[in-house]
Amino acid sequence: MIEIERKFLVTSTSYKESAFSKKRIKQGYLSSVPERTVRIRIKEDKAFLTIKGASNATGMSRFEWEKEIPVDEAEKLLLLCEKGIIDKTRFEVKQNQHVFEVDEFYGENEGLVMAEIELKSENESFEKPDWLGEEVTNDKRYYNSYLSQNPFVKW
Image 1 (cartoon, helix red, strand yellow):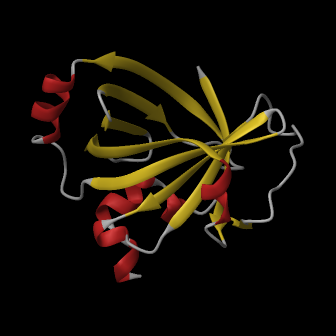
Image 2 (cartoon, one colour):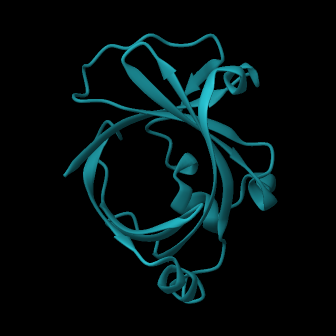
């Protein structure tokens, strides 16, 4: 139940050409404190309740627990969330044995495009596609919970 991921800014839209999946996501936070974020997410026709712990010193690893819940319940829970609902499209792009999740944000986070890759260990190597830019793994401003409270357009 430990999530290990790295985050990067995206420098071009060429990832869209190789995406094998594209899904709209709407999510909100019942709690956005770094020690325990509690997220409600609707991803197309599925919904999830996710609890994440604080990140370690590198920003790459943290506890994550997720459970699928009925969409109608998630819609009701979104009404209880803190201000700042995240709206984005997620593109999944395979790069050798890894999958990058590329999020294109809308609303108050318009203009932000970010990619994440989940790894088996913090030292695992992977090939970087040409559209991958600066790494922002340890920059808390790029956490979705932060973006919900401090939108990208206001930076």
